Amino acid sequence: MPISTETLDGTTCVRIDGELTIYTVAELAAALLPQMGATPRLELDLSQVTEMDGAGLQLLAVVQREAGVAGTALSVTGQSQAVMHALQLCRSAGL
Image 1: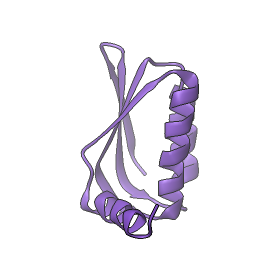
Image 2: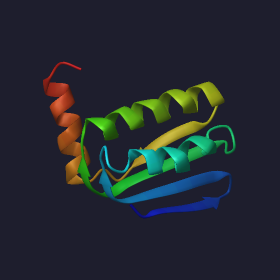
Image 3: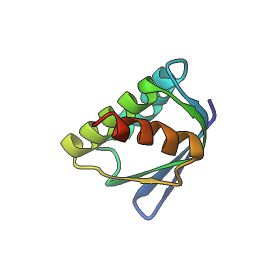
């Protein structure tokens, strides 16, 4: 899973390209979690995510929790169709 990171004016922008699934979350967690507390603002660009499953949703929840604990302002930009579909499934399940 290609991950690109760029820091500009105190905001670290992370773009995720490809799958956000059980097969890729460990790699992504290893790249994202050290950013918590190391940057004042973290922006996740999910516009190029091609597939997302429950493990991907769990990772996003962990990232959100850890950002809050570390005092890092987190924002998510550019939701792909795969991301929107996964989030809609959660909403329809009452979560």
